[in-house]
Image (cartoon, rainbow, N blue to C red; front, side, top):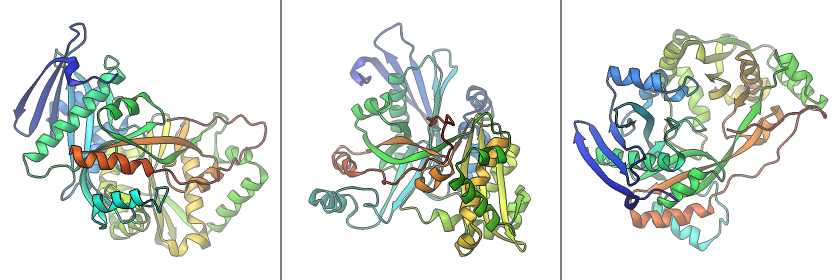
Length: 427
């Protein structure tokens, strides 16, 4: 059962400069009390404690990554920090709230029952039949998939963690309202389907909605190089891979430094938006300065490779090392060259090569183009998110609308040889 405010002995709130604080004191005296501080920024000492607390594999919660992404937080976008402190003022929880502008030109893109009268009415009420655009607070990175928005110490159980996430969003809203820039909705992403968190957040008023599966590929211990991977594919998919690689024979693939990105800044940005702007629904875009900053701060943990034809940059990929996970971060393409040179498929295969080199156990490809990614060897991992309107009335409509949201359907391929034990990975 979710922890409600009536289950708590009391809550105290105090306001500091650019900081909101709340203390949760459980009714059961044997349980810890927790102080929540939400702020616009962190001091040097707070950052040091934060980075020491967050495990190395949670790279998207580390200062180096957050500082890089902050270069894309312009205008109405921002990052807020939630710190959970125990009675001894030790850090026991780190939560990052990305305040972004949610936009969609096609709200019906992932909905079923497209002719439903109720669905059409809800869309009209929620948007006024205009393109959707509103300010949202997201716990979970808007530029990546997976559970990367918070980290709690083992003393904080799932029930309390959901309570704390809710309180962090509420305190963030109070902070934003003081600047007349409130959030319209809250988002918590991403959870494995049927997880306890979804049930607990649902009792808080959040609506669960299914999103396209995260495509994740296992990297087998027997693969020491890309040729080992190719050898484990059935002939049909091995031939397909070799054909794609042959198409790109004239392409020069080079690791890009921060200086290389700077030298190709406009072109890099153009290639990125060629891909990013195709999305039906977005929570903002990465500015090219973020790529530069991430490369400077993360060094070898952030790969950027450029694809050059006769000296012209026609594509790029970026990937992040998260411990045993390799994350296919962002790509950019010039679609005029894509079909002739097989750029997209070559980027997918390059990610496999990079994950093997990084000694990763799995490769996260993100959510798009699931069928194509399955031909490379990725499996779908079912995900759900939770969303909540900041006001009770519209939230009832929002909860009703998201009952129509469903992932896209597509066929999943299995490219591996028979007899090869390839277990679909989870989050």
